[in-house]
Length: 268
Image (cartoon, rainbow, N blue to C red):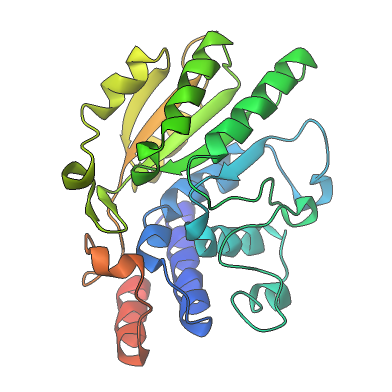
């Protein structure tokens, strides 16, 4: 097992513990982004807890804010959030809600969760950086179901028009959303081709393959004067056999028996 694979396993276990302790939903969509977050935070992003307000830092926006348990687990491993604060997720008196609230000291760049907003925020940051002649990059992680929102495609046009090659979007394509399969609710395919037609330089990767993810992140921008899109093909509930590709786990919190079974599978 590589170092990054070990980190991903621990993050998935931490995410499980957070959700069960807080009796929270969204374990499926949290599990599908674990490897994406690990590749970003442990190999790619120019960030550190001691420089969380440095103007030259990279920015990361979790547009699919309902998956924040995985983000909180990563921020804790990176030293942005203490274990005591982490234990306050979804708890009376705690400070970590079911959707992220902007807190630069804790590494949270934007308040998100109302889907369709994160890419717009990121595009604004990218345009401001261009005009200020700054070199940092802005990464935005969306869900595939989120791209049902028209604001996403408005921003796609805006970003290519303004040649925002400092903007990187990643879509967690797990093929499920809150009420069913994306192809049944609003078919997105051919997905990568759509982004190319909007002027984005686009690549598809296995969203659970850390090597492919790191390689893609290290090569952005893929083309000068074009925003970069990474279509990450994933599985909802990844890492736990009875949760994978099951829409039930968009909302349901595991009970004690299910938690124990999930822990055994995650830890091997």
